[in-house]
Amino acid sequence: EVQLVESGGGVVQPGKSLRLSCSASGFVFDDYAMHWVRQAPGKGLEWVAGITWNSGNVAYADSVKGRFTISRDDARNSLYLHMNSLRHEDTAFYYCAKNVVATISEGGLDNWGRGTLVTVSS
Amino acid sequence: DIQMTQSPSSLSASVGDRITITCRAGQNFTRYLNWYHQKAGNAPKLLIYAASSLHSGVPSRFSGSGSGTDFTLIISGLQPEDFGTYYCQKSYGDIWTFGQGTRVEIQ
Picture (cartoon, one colour):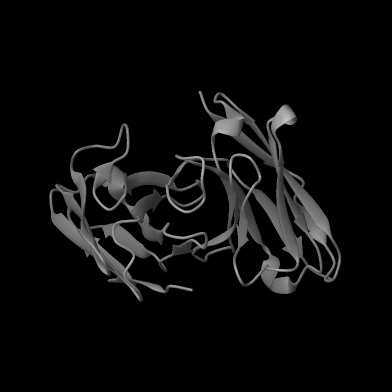
């Protein structure tokens, strides 16, 4: 059974940094691209970032480009999201999601974690 | 970025009804369009990928169609468990985009 478990969320002040982690199991992690998707409380889904199976290509939403960094450690079956210069508008549940293919130029998200809440507040 | 516009933004229907949700893209991207269903407090679930392919385990009452800029999700025979919010998502190119969502309420 595929499992994705996010961790690292919490309350952080504006301008500070936070690192989210996603621990994966139940599938061959390095065969698939991975993504982060967020959802502000009561709002819709927003794609944040994606990374290919071999970390050869990454992509970011304009809203986080230059502030967030997606990475993966295949030896640890883990996905990360390093978030710098956090803003109030970054407050959201952050979901880790598995793509159905190895690249980020196509596919769909067939497995999701339960999410971790990031609250940016002074 | 390609904008995705869903309609309607919400709808109310009865069990057994056939409902249609549309998603219009601001640019042609062939068939790289997915549909998800999310219930409050839960992560989204993939229903349809590549515009018309039913994801494993998804009931056959769900179907998708379209290409280019206009896509449709149809639920034939609405069930009580189908309430929630439906999102389209463009997966063409490296930048992915979700529609704003369509909330479905069961009458």
